Length: 235
Image (cartoon, rainbow, N blue to C red; front, side, top):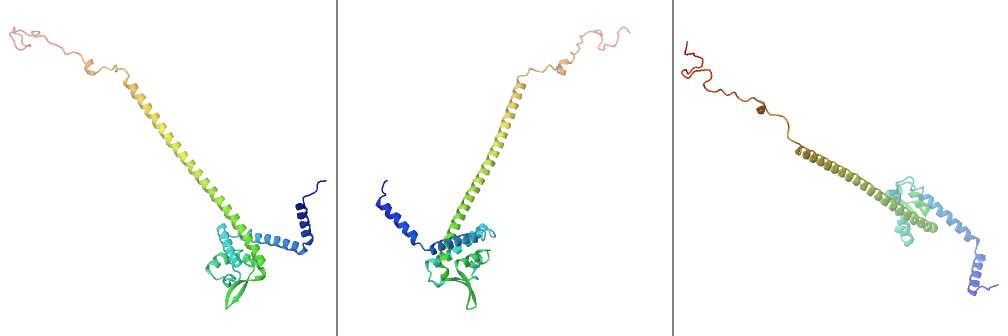
């Protein structure tokens, strides 16, 4: 039997040791993270995408991601630890759209009142949820943007195809009209040529059909002594 290389033996032993030393809490934590990721995904779709327009939903997701990333980048900055629901931008992106405020709460923000002003303040105990929620937001935004890009490209291709089809119809119409005009021109030229080569008409003019004038010879009907042909000199 072939012996395994020492490096493989060491690696296998290390893996086995990790498996033995792995606490039950690690499995529980992984299962919890999986359920949390699935919960965040459901909050996005159908939670946010279904009741809102795609553009509105995408804008809200981006606002949530900015809030989460700011807090992850500067967790001790009080400015990023809370937001006011009365702020115009927050109101338009998180309060008015359906499902978005629920996502902020799932990230770890809770409603509080400070100096008679409403706020949503982050609870540091939910930092793990904040990490998971931010990751799911990035995933959803990337997926939606790629989907919208494909849709935009598909619509552009359909529009170009429709324009090309319309142009082909127009060209076919113009070509057909040009063909008919050329055919009519040739037919007219053929008729003109036929009339030009046709023989003269057999119809006789009135001048040709009239009788020749009668010529009266001098001296007929009267005598040389009389200028009036009706007068008889013997009478």
